[in-house]
Length: 477
Image (tube, rainbow, N blue to C red; front, side):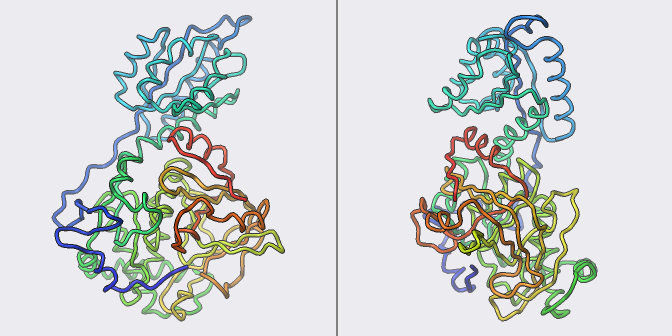
């Protein structure tokens, strides 16, 4: 659902000395003179092998060959991921663990790999006492220590367990653990007003719980940036969208040119400010200068989540998953057809590269926005039939709503609702509809309605991530 937000309504959120949203003063409002923030560094993760390797033919433990195989796979993952820095050591005592943690730094996530029966339980104290998020990786027959990981979690520690013989799961562990330090290096730009749950609207709460900075953008300054965009870049952007579209239906040349100018301006803004996320709370008021939907597509395809309608819950969801799986999300509205056991998701902005940056672009049409009499220019993207998806949203900064489905229908040309649409078969549509957003204490339609869709089944990762970040998971449907 999209709602008109006029400039008068936008300015109505301001107060002298700063912008005021959800009871919090935005003291870090972006201005043209703001210093350029530093680029993000690599995320440090401490890897601890606990105990001495076991003999190859006896005892409960991992032997030397298994330890070397794990180290080789970790080295490959560190190289392939490119944005993690591993500090690898061995611990035979709590004192050695404490020394490794001191070298790693406060709060550094930890991956423990047990190599001898009950070695981990003897050395884990400093990790738990220091509140380090931890994944326990346990090879079969490497000891009985694995069974304590769920107990530590139940006592309030941020611990998750991967018990597997698949060394590729070590990369999964690093992907999960890197999310936490990456969030602490995250800079989000917001065109107020913010919307969503109260916690997600509060920059102080976002900083406190996730570590990310949320910076307000003055729209007047962005208008000046838009006006200064190079005309040749606008022409090239418009030509790309025009040439690659399956069909251009409503938009005229001027609609496409306006949208292309905003697209380039948004890309320039994010590069200049070295920001990792964007939310625009006034997008429905942008028609005169050009809708941001093409620009949102470009940003998401380039690994920068962008949320319309100022939806901070959806934006933070997209950022978490971008760091975890390196794929963009499709933020959209929900509507049900229980007679077919399906759920529709629809919106007028969506990524082309749902498989990630190395994947192919999905086919698309260029359309006018469905809720403003077909004006402007937005993409109608046709996603892949038969694809398994995960539908999710972080709400209140402490709960992840999640479910899975399969795409069973994509219209050749949308009629009702927003332009990009998928129809997904779900486990129990009637139950899902009856309990939709039940845990949310709000009447705001957008906050109740939106979910973010990702290609693939990521429910296991959702559970791991929630344990590591002190969150709850509510499975919908």
